Length: 460
Image 1: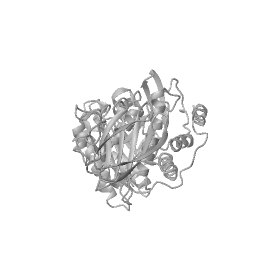
Image 2 (image 1 turned 30 degrees about the vertical axis):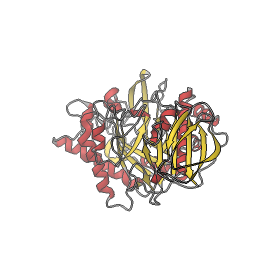
Image 3 (image 1 turned 90 degrees about the horizontal axis):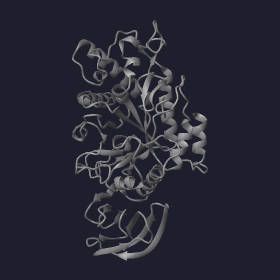
Image 4 (image 1 turned 90 degrees about the vertical axis):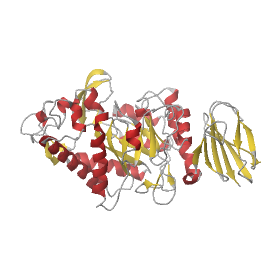
């Protein structure tokens, strides 16, 4: 797999330009425009990038064959890929079980390593290897976490550390092999006394439940101790734990906040959509600094016409919680950006259909515009342009996106002065300068090419 991965990405990184500046931070919410983070400079940091299940622990998830030890992921090629596409963000995936039977391809056994705890025995776990000692952390796991985050930082990339993973507990047999299953550790820990694996992602009132939470909190402290000094770190509580996990996820967020309060640096903690039986309201009302919703109700429509009901949290629109790894294209990326959202794209990092290539490219396109504009002062508007998609710093700067109209209006009635005009061809990744226009009234614009376009107006 490593060789194939490298070959694939050599095709798209023939001329990688290295990031010249490391990622700066730590990130904190930009108070004047809390749709975005800032690094403390006052500049808005727009987060965008591709993520994949193999970018931290080596594992065989969704690969067609069984392999133990699992395939080795080419992390350097992955970073090259992100830099080549001008991405600056990804989720660092965690898998909790050393073995599971995959849901897709169905019935294929998968393996994963390394894990946070040492496998010392005595005794043999269900997977035939020594049992875990949950009081002894595995240096290899945390050294890899730190080194991979540093490598990303040096390329100008921010990393969200996934603290827990809930999908595998619900949709595979991962609990059979999980370190917190009493059959697999020497500490007498049973994270699901009821036999229901989802119980591990809940607050349990029993004596055993409190021991389990103590172990989880110890893991959180170890993660924070490992990476607290790094500026490019964010945290994510858990990937796709069920709806019953709400109180437990709020605890994780608050615990990390409290523990970091005594540390030199503090980092954003995020909460992503609970699957199944989640609700976006639980994210909006959480103590999280950033969130990733699902499609939502008729006013949200994060798939095809996103409009967040609130603007007091950083929102990362992630295909993982909208389609999984089967949706998202350049139109979706641009729509998300124009509505004040950050963007993540979950993919297999394989040769892809057109929609996947266009999404990768569009994330880099939107980031280039975010870098050239004064994004900190810009807010989404559905009324300034007939397209319904406009980021505006009224009277000074406008970015308008059109995906289905060659002609549209932009209301500049409250914006006197002369504006420079730039057209951007989304499909061809090309910019075209046009004659300046005068503000002070509504103006009609016609795209000089077919297909989706962005119009950038700036006061001269």
